[in-house]
Structure formats: C-alpha cells, structure tokens
Amino acid sequence: MANPLKQVFNKDRTFRPKRKFEPGTQRFELHKKAQASLNAGLDLKLVVQLPPGEDLHDWVAVHVVDFFNRVNLIYGTISDYCTEKSCPIMSGGPKYEYRWQDEKYRKPTALSAPRYMNLLMDWIEVQINNEDIFPTNIGTPFPKNFLQVVKKMLSRLFRVFVHVYIHHFDRIAQMGSEAHVNTCYKHFYYFVKEFHLIDTKELEPLKEMTSRMCH
Figure 1 (spheres, rainbow, N blue to C red):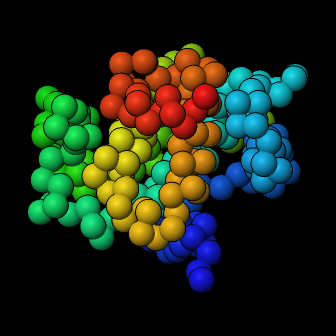
Figure 2 (figure 1 turned 30 degrees about the vertical axis):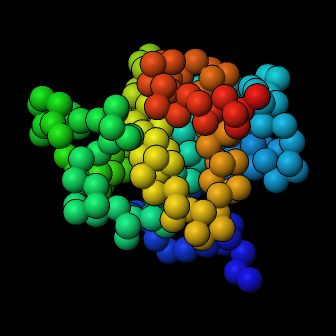
C-alpha cells in the first residue's frame, strides 16, 4: 500500500517551488531544530515554543515559510477536485465566505476557491521572497510591522485549512492522508495560539473540530 504521507509530501502537485533556507545560516539551523522536534514525535504544544535564547522573529519566519510549503502541498493534492464548477465561491461551509482584497481587487471580492487559492499562494510567495519583510542576511533587522504582516498571512493560510476540511476532506480521507493533514493542522494551530497570531473569530469555522483534536 502506498505511503499516504508520500502522497501528500512527495507529489509534485505544488503551484510553485518551495522556499528553502540557506545552509549555514541561523534560520537554517532553526529550521533543522524545528524539523528534528517534529520528527521525534514530541508534544506539538512543546515543539512550537520559542527555544531559549532564540529570536522570536526568526522563529516565526521559519515557521511561516514551513507552513506555506506544507499548506501549499496539501491543497495541491486536492486541487483537481477544487474547480470553478465544484467551488464557485471560496467558502468554509454555508456560514463562511472569504473574499479577496489586494492592490488589484480594491474591494473585498467574491472569487471561486481555485482563483482565491492561486492569488493567495502567489501573494504569500511574494511576501516571503521580499527581503524587506523576510531578510535573509544575518544582522539585517526585520521590519517593525513584521508580526502584523505575518498575522495576515497566517489568517489567510488558515482559510485553506477551512476550505479543505469542510469541502474536500473526503478526498484527503480517500488518499489515506487524514492523520498527516491533521498533524499539520495541529502544528499550525498550536503555533498561532502560542504567539497570538490569529484572531479567535478567524478560527471559528473549525472550532468544534479543533476542540476535539487539540486538547
């Protein structure tokens, strides 16, 4: 039987190349430390905590890039089933509709889920590759509004989880990837809660599921 983790993580279904950390940099070392903790199967509530002596902004930056890559991969595995026809509105069930707003769409605009997802992933990719927001040179400070920018990015990434869980979870289960996607979600949830990076009202659509999954 095929390994369900490989179906999610080794499938070339991403929209764009992964952002990686340069070996030898502090952020690369932090990334390795975070991955080692995850791979060791440690309590996710502990894994997300800021290691002693490390910089909060570096720790957040490493995780934002990692979550972007992971969520992008998860959505890539169900993207064939998320179409203009099946998902004409980007939503999380009947109660929640997500509208897109950026420099092109000045007012919050209703879009199909696949269109919304493409704009979202493109927008986040631009942010994390912007040296003024995510500096890669040692000693270059993060901007003063770094955490504000990150909050917006993570709130929008959370909406991908909402849409996938509510509208496409049958596909995730069919692939045998339910446990893996759940672990990714729990890691994301504990992280944003630990550092207060998403407003509670934004988490409402998955509140019941989260209360069962994240004790």
